[in-house]
Image 1 (cartoon, helix red, strand yellow):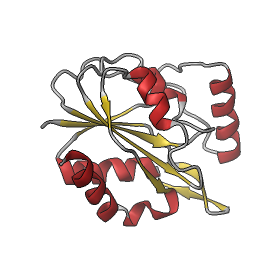
Image 2 (cartoon, one colour):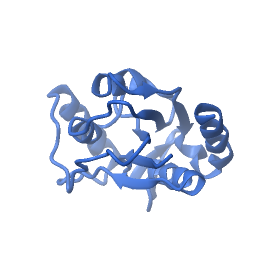
Image 3 (cartoon, rainbow, N blue to C red):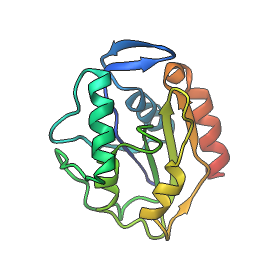
Image 4 (tube, rainbow, N blue to C red):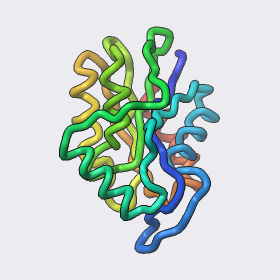
Length: 171
């Protein structure tokens, strides 16, 4: 089984359990790399052509406005073909109840027919929110497995949980 991780992640100022702090690597990117370590998956990071603000409060306002307009922002590069993959991990932080809009830009370009999808999120209290439901809109003919939500403040210790989730869902 060949696997791919499609994810969005943002470094800079982030929210961690009641306070703000700057990070060099986004939480979802840490999780994506752990999935790669466990499965040997390829990675694809969906990146906005015009990045969100480095300031957390400005970023969440930008993301909320983008979501309200149902805007699909332009990406630095787009993945156009996933034919060579059987399992697709799809993840990102929770922005206003779902994945960030750049993920939907990318998902809208792909055919998930016959694929197995493993949804995941990083969050600080939102869990998976509507991620699974929203992915199913873009992948109605895929098998969407049970998702995994990881608190952003716990990502660095999440590798055992990821291993268990992957083993349970793909066995």
